[in-house]
Length: 525
Image 1 (cartoon, rainbow, N blue to C red):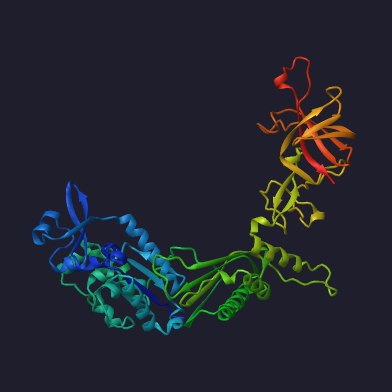
Image 2 (image 1 turned 180 degrees about the horizontal axis):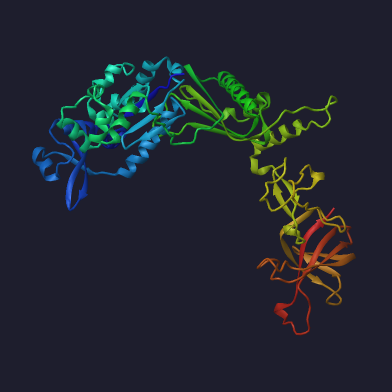
């Protein structure tokens, strides 16, 4: 497929940025933007009204005011202009995913294979010009086979960019040459690009350097000039542009299914599955400063089943507000993982795809962070003995825990396995942090006879313990003050079972305010 590049030029971007929108009534007033250089206020940009009156960049403010006393002035803000150009480049993704700011006043767009979605190159250019004009920006654009040719035609020509004669008729400045080189070419009578064809290349290189030939070859397509997108282009992306805007739930769902079919076919060819998908919906009334509507969908495991993904998107697709209509939808797999062929047993055993879909549905409805599982972590401190992990699959290598095979969480090769303790009971519910209680024990190291928790007195009928858990001395500040804990399993007279611990040890010389304290850490049953 022949390469096609669109170059967009915004010749009055700084001044248009200040006179569009609510300030549109200022378009009829002469405006100049200034910067201070060596104590002088210099004009750096003007709008059309000021230019017509003879105000040009490079004039001092005094000279400009002498020509036009009623000139309106403002400080130039190149940083704000650069951010605006970046937003415009992002807005141009409606025409192609491959867009990039070009200098300080242009955007380069690789529209190879995209123009037919808008009715052809002429229709695409007309649509681009109309939208920018409605937004208050003066713009020129051209399409050519190379970025250099498109750049020159956008700024210096208006002929059919597919004809070499159109490029030959452009001035030398269309080759993006330094001023010194342009002056040297003009001194020997070379003013048009076409003048270079009949001259020996060696002589041109000797006289004007290799930069002239490099720019000349780039314009003619002899030397490649890549266009680097200002945002990463996802390797798996599907786009759908509509001849007429869509606005009903049924048509949006149908478009979603079409995009999923295209995307999943590409994932299957690459042997990958999607872990995260992002849907962008571009409305017809979207302005340059407006971000497209986005829906994000996460999957607990790599998947490329269009039917499963369609059901998941069905839970959130109603969040799309079509307004006057959606003209473009883009679906991208922003996170993928290898996924080989999947085959279940003939009787269906071993196929846990239903569990994966259930987890994804819960995550879509409640939020991904709301659906987790606990895996064991190598620590005897109860509050550190478990860690949250994804509901399916195994934690990444740098996760603080490694899974247990019985939980469907096999460790990676070479990893040790952290197992649930099976030689001592643990409560199913823990307090975080442990709650203080008032306990009474017959002797300091015995279990309590009674304790008061949240104002209620509990008399102990049975007790078992202690189980001593020392602090993790290798972790600074770990534990409660670095004291050892003595845990007791106790049952009150009503049959309720608690897990209490004494923080610290009794010593004869311990002052009353530093005496060990009791805490309730969890419940059994």
